[in-house]
Picture (cartoon, rainbow, N blue to C red):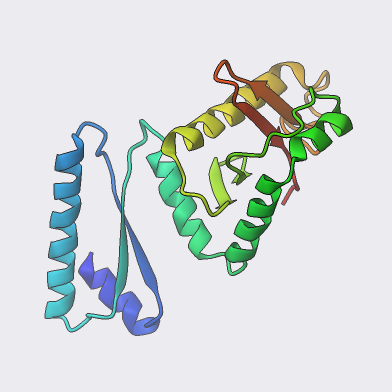
Length: 195
């Protein structure tokens, strides 16, 4: 791995590397962190031996059996977005407004006036990668809940959304969903734009 880092760094000394430590789902938390530290230390030692102290490497523990792979890819994609801080600030502003009341009036959903948004994500629906989120820390359970909502919405849309399969997609600009959970959490999904 370090040889690839070395070759890439010679071409572009501003490059950043992302290492996905995969298949950690069967390991307990202590073993996961120990494996990450071991890989980190080996890579750092090899980089220092080759005089590549300035190479920047980020490590992600991932699994296909939970949402860690999506979160890791989300963090990588966010590093590529130059306007990320602006998107985060806009989502913070969105959270502070009593926006659900507005959506309730626009889309004839129940009125949730006075309730602020707890957490906002800007997702790529197809991949479940979040492009941006507000400045509050990401709670993995909330992220997983949002991913599950996307799955449910797509599944229901594909079954009940179109009468003619060739004329519409599963999720389009008119699609939206509101799910009210027993915990009094409300999940709201609305498409912003197609790319």
